[in-house]
Image 1 (tube, rainbow, N blue to C red):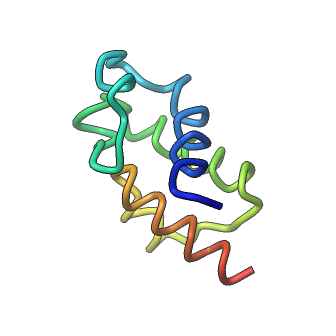
Image 2 (cartoon, helix red, strand yellow):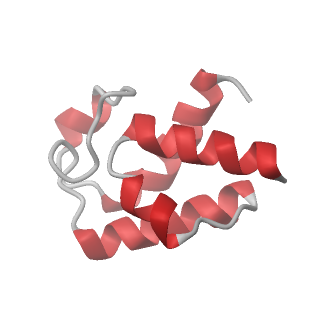
Length: 84
């Protein structure tokens, strides 16, 4: 899966939870889920559950704590997909 495909998938997953449309339109690797997209912590858990379903992976608590930005999420997803 390419970086672009991964970002596209993440955009689809986070769209229902965002509070800042402008930041969403500019979403990049450097986008922070909480500070930029204004996703609250409860919805961040939903995002992580959706990521697990979308990619058929299991994200442990340690990895979950790191998934605060697009780049961190991409790293976790890529690592988990390689472990499958």
